Image 1 (cartoon, each protein chain N blue to C red):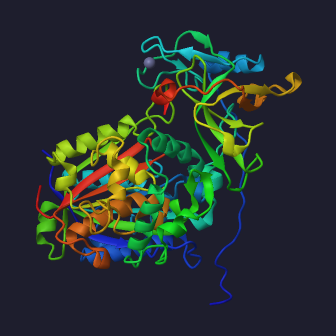
Image 2 (image 1 turned 90 degrees about the vertical axis):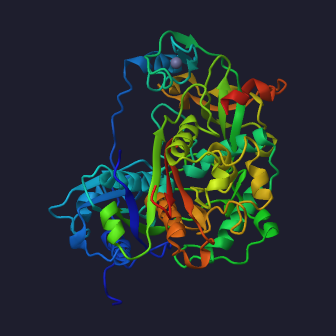
Image 3 (image 1 turned 60 degrees about the horizontal axis):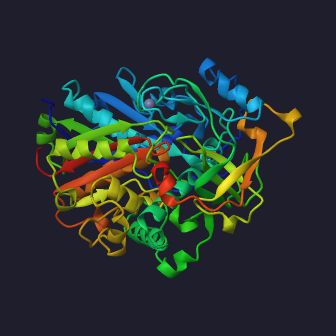
Length: 163
Length: 385
Ligand SMILES: [Zn+2]
C-alpha cells in the first residue's frame, strides 16, 4: 500500500576511549617528539612500525627493544582514490600509499602529496612533512603527508618481500 | 571420524540494490523459506540454526541474530552466530556442517545475509584507526594497492581485470537471482570504465546488494531418505591471520595457502584443476580471480592471469569460475560467502539452471574476508566422501 511507512531514518553515534596499552607508549611518545619509534621482535628480529599490538603476529611473543626507524622511506605500493564517500577527510583525487620506512620491516599507510598522482611510482623515495609542532598529538596525523625526496627509486627486489 | 553431511536444501533471494519492501527479518525469511521447500521440510523439522553476517556496523543493528530468532522460528532451538567479516557466509556454512558432522544435529538450517541499503558500508569500512593516518577509502582503497603489487610482481597485462569483469557480468545474465544483469559488456567498453581506486576500474568492482542465502544441511540418514538432489560435503577448511604484521605476504597470504592445502589434503585432491569441475570463488574485485587461482593452487605463481587470458575460467573453459556471476554481480556481503558455497552445491546438485556446467562431480566454494585474512573453503561432491 502506498501509505505504508516502510523506512525511517535513525542516525546513531558514539565517542570511544581507546586504550593503547603500555607497549605502544614509546611509539606514541615518539610521535609527540617527531620521531618514528618501532619495536623489534626478539625472536624473528623484524621491526614492527607501528607496533600496534606490542606483539609479533608470527612468533606470538611480546615485542622487545624500541627501534627508531628512518624519517625517509620507500613507496612499496599505492592507490589513487577517486571515490567520494561519507566521512572522507582528504580531497580527491589523492594517493594513499604503503610506505616502508628505512629500517622498518612492514609498511604503513599514508598520504602522498607535492607530486602529480600520475607520477607516483612503486619504489619512489619519500619523506614526511610534519605539522607545526604546537599541533602535535600522539598520532601519525602529525605528518601532514609524505613527498618525494628526489632520490633514485629503490630497486623492486629491495621491497618485493614487503608486498 | 566425522559423520557424513550433505546439502539438501538451497534458497536465495533476488539480490538487488534496495529491498525497501522488507525488513532484515523478512529478507532472511525469504531465503529460508526457499531453502526449506527445496529440502522438503518445514521450520518444525529443523534442529538448530547457524546464522552469519558481516560487521554489524553495516546496518547499525547490533547482534541481529537476537532480533531474528522469531523470524527463523528458532524459539526453543540452538542458535549460533558466526562472524568472520566478508568470509562469514562460508565460515557459517562450515560451522553448520560441523553441527551435523559432530553427530549432534541431523537437520541444520544456515543463513547468511546483508541489507546494505539500510546503512553505508563504505563509511563503516573507512572508520579512522586510532593514532593512524585516515587515508583508508573502503574495501576498494584497501585492496587496490595489493592488486597493484600483484600486477607488478606477475607482469600481468592491464586488461586482465576487465576480462574477468566481462566474464562474470556475462555469466550473471544466466542467473535470475544476480543483482546485475548487464549483457552488453565488451572488453573495449570495460577498459573505458572509470578508475575508482586506480588501478581498479569501476567495472572491476562489486555492487552493493541486499540479499540472503540459506542452506539446509543434513546427516547421512536424513540425506539418504531425501528424494531431491543433494551435494555431499567432502571437506571443509578455515584459516585466519592478522591484517598487518612484519613480512606479511598480502598478495597470497599464508592463511590462504595453508587453508587450501589443508582442504585439498582432506578432500583427497592432488591436482585441483583436474579434479574440480566448477569453482565459486570470492572475487569482489576482478583481479582477485587470477590472484586466488595462484594462491589456491589452481595455477602456478604469477601465471594465474594467463589462465584468465586463455579463457580457462570461462563457463566453457577447463575450470569454470563463477558461472553464477560471482560477487562481482551480487554482493550482499554476509551472504556472499554462502552464495559461493551454495552455488558450488547447486552445480553438484544439477539445479543451477542456465548457468549449470555439464556433469559436475566435485565443486569448490570459497570465501575470504577482512584484509585478506579470514578464509573459508569447501569441496562438495555428487558421491559420498
Ligand atoms: Zn617475530
